[in-house]
Amino acid sequence: MNDSSPTAPWSVKRVSDLIRGYIGRLGAVWVEGQIVEFNRRATMAFGVLRDIDENVSIDISIPTGAITGLELREGARVVVNGKFEFWTKQGRLSFKVREVRLTGEGQLLAHLERLKRRLAAEGLFASARKRPLPFAPALIGLICGRDSKAEHDVVEVASRRWPAARFAIRNTAVQGPMAAGEVMAALAELDLDPAVEVIVIARGGGSLEDLLPFSDEALIRAVASASTPVVSAIGHEPDSPLLDLVADFRAATPTDAGKRIVPDGRDEQALVADAVVRLSRTILGRLEREQEALNSVRSRPSLKDPTWIIASRAEEIAALKQDAGRGIDQRLSAATAKLAALTGRLAALSPQGTLERGYAIVTKDGALVTDPSAVAEGDGLRLRVARGSFGAVALGLET
View 1: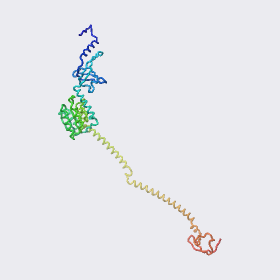
View 2: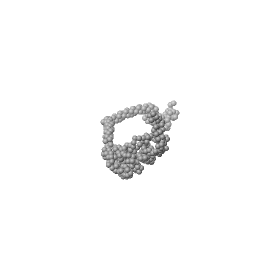
View 3: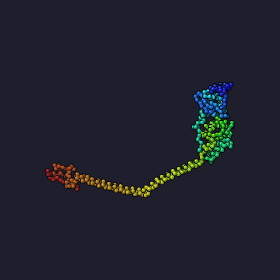
View 4: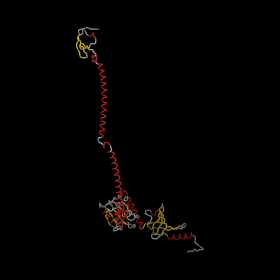
């Protein structure tokens, strides 16, 4: 019964107690909503549960044990069970959650997260296994929806940038239960064609369910096993199917894929023109240096007058011969003078010199006579003089 009146108003505490009592009688309820402002701590997680269709929300608190193993994140759609609590001191209503179940996209996201972790553990997303894209592929494989904007964007952008590019297009379903199988079949066909240098898988944006085929485990493994580099161009920038992780290159959009798979012809022409200019400068500089070196060599006397070196050497030889002649003459003169001196000395010491001065050498029976007592009167003697020898007989002896 409402017994309040202007003269007998209720206190704030009484109102708070009444609200708390009413809420307490509500008991445990199941509530559906979307989690926002999620904050996980050691033992409790806190956030806001927002209505799916209306701009209405309530604060929630969840024991971490109730969400163990769940991929609970911002935006997850959930069904939660718990009891409402009214905190009288702050006048604040909150919902204490005891059980959490993912629904809709939340359930799909949890499944994809588990698949992502498993495939990552196998190394399918490792950067080391990703192959570089060819510089200017002559034939590009393109898997996309029939008459789709994704097909138009890839072909139009790539052809504008690199007019020589050609496409092998395979149109498939890009959503629904048949999409993954058709994309795998097209991938296998293009991968077997040796002329195809890169394969682009493209489609426009969509909901999580629309893009689900591009997170199909069989398709992910098929892309990982392909021998041709694969480009993922699925949806818009925020979209991130598992194909993005296994592909050799992830393009943000189909338009971005058209830019990434071929070079820009105008940029390449500019690079070639710049390279030609730089190469020409280098060649001209080299020619100038070589011409200067050649001019320096040609200016040398030996090349201006080839006989110059012979004439200069002839003069050197003549000077050397003259010096050698003078040296020989000097040495001969010195030797002649020395020989004359030695000859004079030898002549002075020679017995012949003594004989030339009128002396004679006396021998008796071949023996030199130096003592008169060795000769008797009548002995035959032999006398040697400067110009010869003759015999003589000792006549008388003088002492």
